[in-house]
Image (cartoon, rainbow, N blue to C red; front, side):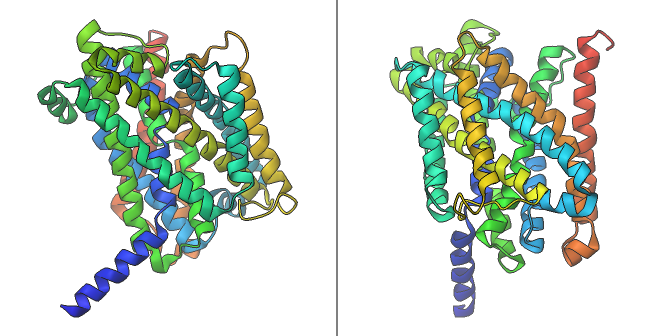
Length: 415
């Protein structure tokens, strides 16, 4: 018994020592784009899309676990491994695509900052520049340990969506039923929404950031068992948050006004206002927290990925003169992402939704490289994928390609 307690204490201590990368990566995926996508799903289709969360959670766990395992075993980031195993040309193309997709994601985060604070009467011409400067200073003037603590603290504020969901008093019986009852509609809006939900939950940037963060934190194969638990907990948390966002918008908007196309996540917050000031304030505060949180992570993830892939020094523990390309790219993404949002009449909502669909389109390509890498014996040794994990992973690739083709087919009237 004493030995069992001692072993539990050891694993408990190691778990809290490694907590950070997996939990942060999964939770931050509920960013402004994710919130808009889930809000739109609930407002337009009610409880029908809830069934997707269970398979998405399984796929998210598998994708995140593979990256965490590769980082712990090899001590290298994903883009670094792609360059070493597949060459610089392929890596450069992949990094160019990633920068393009992530730039649209960064824009969507600052769009979320703008729309959330406009609910409180603060102009985007004030909020966006101030938040951009704050985001820049947080990472540039901090180190990995301090930045990670702030990120973990920000994760706590996602509970606002859970509370908002309860305040709306939705039809819990219907929500429970459609959580396990698959519903497929052959119409462009529904398929577009499905691609967006998968793309926003299992985004390409997440795989690169998680593996880089595991490496920078110093997690090795010895601590990997605890790191795996952390990844799984984070994945469940992100799906719970998504569930309550869809439920809140289904109850407050779809079942009050009928199928509704919302233009931005702030409209979802306003839709909760009739159900009480607290529901509105909590949803709005959650949107701001999610937006500024992701506005830190996404440029950071992109800078990590590109610098690793192209062989430049990277890391928040390094000074600016030690990793100039890393900090230049991080700064450029923030400046461009925030600057575009300040353009008058810029289509913020279209940009947010497009960014999520682009995530879904790029994801299969990233997954293919991940699966090929993690099954290389010379890289992973005994830590390669099991047969069933490979099966599910390849299914995920085929599923995403199929969804994208289905959307194109339905849109042009082929289906």
